[in-house]
Image (cartoon, rainbow, N blue to C red; front, top):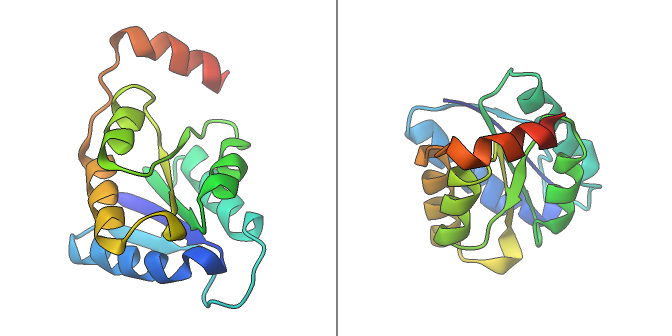
Length: 142
């Protein structure tokens, strides 16, 4: 799977670990930054991830910050992006099954790394169940 990833400084450490985890699993990943723990303004790194997913260049995106809230808001401002802020396995499963989310937002300060990696794996492998949810998703994309 082709995956775009980006974070601000508060999500940098998990971004690096997730990036390596994805590469080890055989995914093609592009890192949109940031590239250090120096304070950085998250939209500079999140919006390009969202735009790349919306354009179809990448199948999925992953964005990270301290809480993941600002990153989800920034990503969802891009037409065609459905970014879900996830904090546990159930939220990751449901954002894919029911919302067909194409971008995942995670907060480094909200969970341990093992949980974050499990959420990423579940997000990437859970299919959208379609059906009654499809009309709602199509409305959001219009």
